[in-house]
Length: 306
Image (cartoon, rainbow, N blue to C red; front, side, top):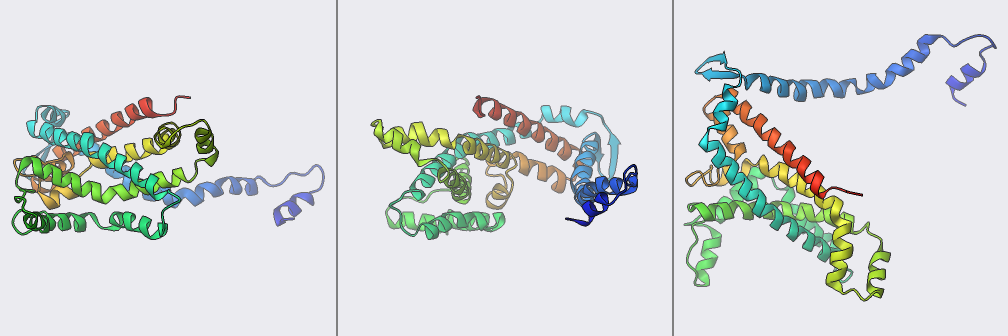
């Protein structure tokens, strides 16, 4: 029996425990979470609120003047912003589905009973995720260098012409997509693999008894079982892609001809290259609204409807 219960048990009939002790116990949880709340308010909530306040100001050199919704009106009529949004949307609609499809196939292969050295192979596919964003961006910039890159050198060995990976608008986008796919496929595959290992084997046995082949078992058992984590990885990939910055900044700096300019890179240029923090904050809030709307749409159309 604890000290508290002993104290309560020894209170004479008709007497009440002093309220101070009970109030202290009620306040204790709030005292424990107070440091986390203070850190959140200082490093998260305050910057969010201050960014919105900045978005209402126009920057003229070192002078900031209140402009109301002028930055948002400017954003709606800014062709470069729409170019950046279109480039980001292309990556989202093309690269993300390919990456997630590869991750599902990889997870199914890694879950096979026939596979040997599973731990080593899983680690190998997950290792790219450990690599820093800038480091692997520089790695791909060197590998895909049109003149001195290893990839074009290998293509020359087998008789193919060099590819203008980082100097052509189409190939530059493909290069960004290749880098993203290499970095994040293994990470998503590990998430899918953890879900696959939690699926009941009875479902597969029942499907096999009913005469379902490998494809039908994958279609009617594996994919429905993966639905929750597919939604999770889709939302995470959507958020990450819409915030894409490091890879285009390191590999192409948004070029050539703004073909790899993303919303994140455009935000950075306005804030830290042109020091137009009001307009950069407006871009940030517009991006947050877009991410929120896409997240709601994904939950609505892909979420659990049971």
